[in-house]
Length: 615
Image (cartoon, rainbow, N blue to C red):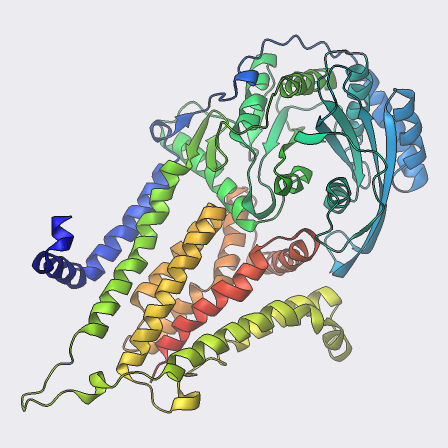
């Protein structure tokens, strides 16, 4: 405190920070990257443990016996689905009613803003079927959900069969203290979104759906099951939800504990756990697993039906059965016993899962990185913005230098006008508004004048607006005020640097992965861009580190992490598909990544582009 209260010491500290500003910024950036890469090193991580006392022991005797019968039911479901050319609603209703469940249906429809070429759909119409097993030993104020999507073709028929088998088995048990809802949703995420909106009496996406005729209690937890083979070799746990949300870590711990007890091979991000953490290959494997989670979380899209439950504060995860070339095989009975054990433990909960972490990264299922460990990596990079802001502020308040004749330098003395700073701010954000609103609104006009489809029109319009923005705000400070001043670009950069610091800080609190990736690319730009650096080289670097190029590089990097590298033409098509899916995810489910990039990140980047060409 004495250092800051003493004017002389405070002045000395400020002089030191401004004199060594550039070296300190470089060291902070390298330290932040090194800290993040060290998070996957096992001695720096924490071993997972169960925080919820009600689920602290796996001493539950799982007795589910009907795995083979469930597979037969799955084949019957597949036959009726093929005959009905879609969801066999009548057959599902009769089957659930025969098992003693209260069965209800919900119809829904949704017209997409533009065709989804990945799944070849534009107008979506379907029906959800769900059955409720009422709790015999409680007042029915709480519920659990087990869902299985009705996927097109032969996908996920086994999951529906196992869901029905578990419903029949659970019906014979008397110890349930919560309602259990067995849900078969059509059209994957769209059907799940309709059911959740109907269950909670909300409509945030403008979808048309019929009101639910039957409801259980307040949903405490949910599991989504995806199986596409009679025999599987491993179970993969999917955690990433809408806008980077994650379920409580105890849900992942519960899955891992029962996999260890029953002897099922379990994975996360499709990666097996390795014990050779002290080797180079073991460390690279952990880094690869953690980076896959970072990339998926940064995308903001739900990576399974469970992802939409999280916005309603319902802890949920998806369990996917994988059939690979491994010799170890797991049958449907074993998977059913694992689900039985998890539901019996969730049945013991006296309150919502809350004692463990909600913000974490997982290099493996047995280890995790908490928010207290990974936030310093972001902080080391973000502090560069504050250091640069301090340096700019000192330059602005320092009295102008005098020449040898004692005359004040008029170029430095001239104070910037309000319009010289306000004009680029307004025009940059208007460009962002155009990027957010015009691609969908102008798709019909683009289709009429160019030989492209609706989806291509939306994506290409977005790219065109983004590219045009590079020219539109160029020297906007001269639009109303003539020549810019030396102090003008400093004031604009100070505002832009503080704007970016607040933006990245808020983003990292909600979605750390997205905030960290943006910080890696935008902070170097914000720190060192000035009107006095070489224009051509700096413009090239600025474009390479722009949000659009960051997304392009992320697409190729994600494919490398999946060990499915692509060439540039295929990667470019995948890049266009990612843009269209981002816009669709925002319209259909409320993903915030596209409006964040269009309305905030891109305009902020344009301010630094404007500073580079300041005259």
